[in-house]
Length: 128
Image (cartoon, rainbow, N blue to C red; front, side):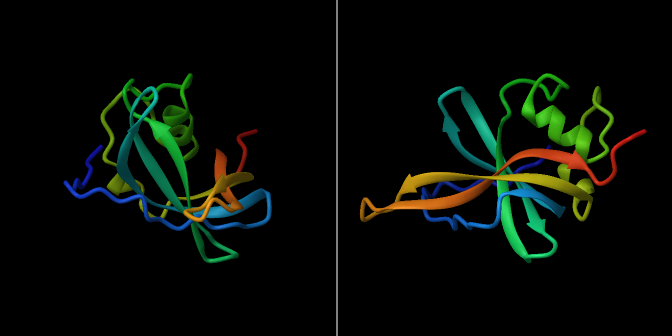
């Protein structure tokens, strides 16, 4: 997995809100973000095809991707065979489905807002 890095800090990013549920989507890219409680993280960015909205799924990257963790489950849904190194650039444009759920947060003015995030990535079609 390759990542572009920057030494600048930013907490400015869009937090879209869309209807909860399963949406057809397309993988755009993976980006490193600040470390979380449990270590290094990245955001797997997807475009919801019908709404033309970009939305992300945050995954931890401190452990190798496996079927037991979110990163591995996401890569499997994108058609990756685990057990070898993968460059996520090769996944750009891969179609899938994403399960979108709401969450709440406080904005800079301490007002409660609702936004959406991806809780699960699924293959475009389930295997029989």
